[in-house]
Length: 466
Ligand SMILES: Nc1ncnc2c1ncn2[C@@H]1O[C@H](COP(=O)(O)OP(=O)(O)OP(=O)(O)O)[C@@H](O)[C@H]1O
Image 1 (cartoon, rainbow, N blue to C red):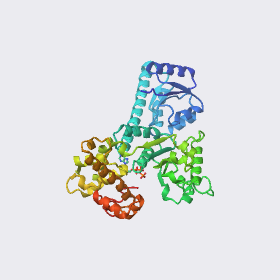
Image 2: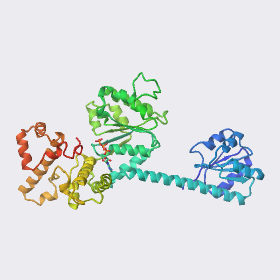
Image 3: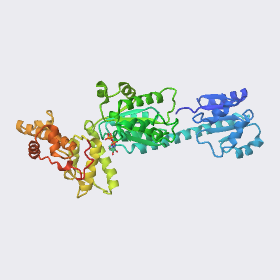
Image 4: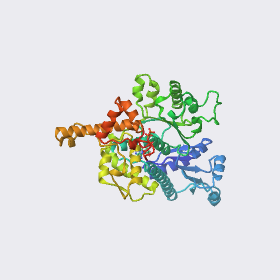
């Protein structure tokens, strides 16, 4: 247990010495002394000392007056008054309810030692209560996130660590891997959680005005408290800039300047915390000068990368169960479960759209299963996982069958992706891959690939993000 920090407010050397010795005989807590005008500052400063002894004879009258004005007991500190006049104790207790205990002074060890023990115990209880409250909050917040893999646990640890600062965090990962969820979690766990969380989806704003929409116009008076700029709307909270991969060079430069200013040592607590995300490989973009190298270097100092779902298949079952439970509740489809056969298919699926695609698959299953069991026929999966050359299953077949099986997997994945991009339009898909429409149609027929699940209005719109 970390020892409590103790302050003695007294200008009398003898009082200081008696108290220090008595405290040292009960615990190893660090003790400091203060007197005069600075004492009040120490006494009332938040996060200051946990236990404060105040010698009423030498304390400044302002300090005593201020204590009397506080009507309820301190929640974070424990205050013990040393009263030189026993007759005044009941009156003092009435006047200063914020005080924990009033000790007649000077006191013998018989009175002083138990008083110190009681006060220290209160400090410990306060600290334990705070820790429990924090644990409950973290538990509630992390209850919205599933994932059992070592990687996911490391990500959650990193989120907890980075949440407490004011620094910008850079979140990367393919679409649907949970970047926005990570950003919201960082915000909820931070000291700004009561403030606003503003998300700006950068590609949705016109490129030419994006910089002004975020940072305000140069003509805006400073501080532009009524400016409609996102930065202003996020004051006291978090601004989440999502998909920054295509910012104009001017907007990148402005962002770099802002980050340098807000992260300078002189700026202890910026008004807005920035969280920034992208699904693009910005490092690669910097090589072709498509992204400001200096900005990238600043961003990557605090970085969270969310790996694609296909690289952490052990997360699929817990995620699937977690999403099923959450969505079943929302859709009022209670008691549904995933069949073992479907779970096998989910494990084998490449999940190009990551967790969002998994979520949509499960929603589809919940909506369309005719019984409590959700099976492979109740969901829309674009096809079997391609069998790699080293797959054990592949080696159980003879050469012809193995080749056919691998080709089938390849075509399902390759054409599935094309259809996803073209939203089920075969002509567009054919053009994109350099085949004639009819040739593509023949392949689709051969491998039993339907364009229907990829078309809007078939119940899976948005389920196959680009
Ligand atoms: N670890 C997780 N546990 C539970 N749900 C998750 C997890 N990660 C993501 N999700 C869910 O998956 C969906 C997609 O997540 P999110 O929107 O955060 O992804 P994204 O990376 O920001 O996607 P995009 O780049 O397309 O904006 C959301 O509904 C989110 O709640």
